[in-house]
Length: 194
Image 1 (cartoon, rainbow, N blue to C red):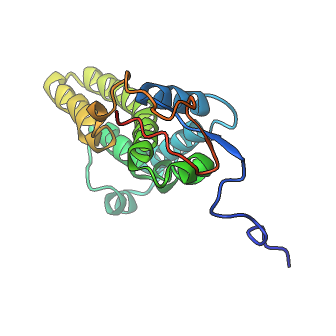
Image 2 (cartoon, rainbow, N blue to C red):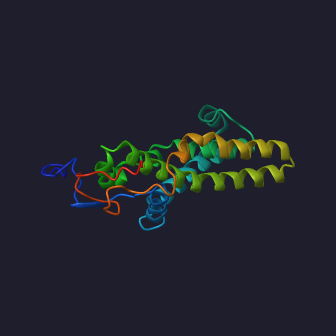
Image 3 (cartoon, rainbow, N blue to C red):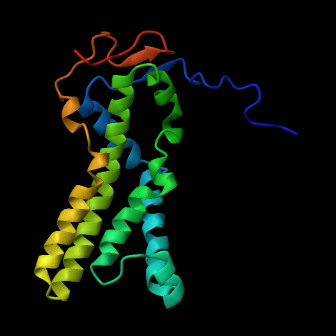
């Protein structure tokens, strides 16, 4: 029986040269580029997650829906949708799809945080506006503007764990390795902390 992991060079990256971003801005730009190119893994995960949660919200029998969701009401839908989309395992498993760059950065905490924060910003950017628009549409149609305001604020602020540390990486922080962010294997680190 063939096992794909046998004979592999795990945990060392497959490529000889792995490109790592020298700035937080570069990391974020690269993550948006990865998310907006085929196979659209981030977008499809978030969309499928939202679709499954919405199907459960609207089509489960009342008793099962009450057991599944603790918040109820028209504005609660946007809150639950945002929480569901943020906390889903495929959406939060941001390391596995990008294993080559993560393995190259694993020994450099600053670089690893830079990669993770960029991935979190991309996830926040896709989820928050969509859920905030759903909350606005629901609240305005229900003529409950104050609750709508609270809901939109909650959607934008509560997932701040995804955005924690934004100020840690200035867009002008540059790579000191002089390699433009490329690492040959795992030799030398593009620390970006200076």
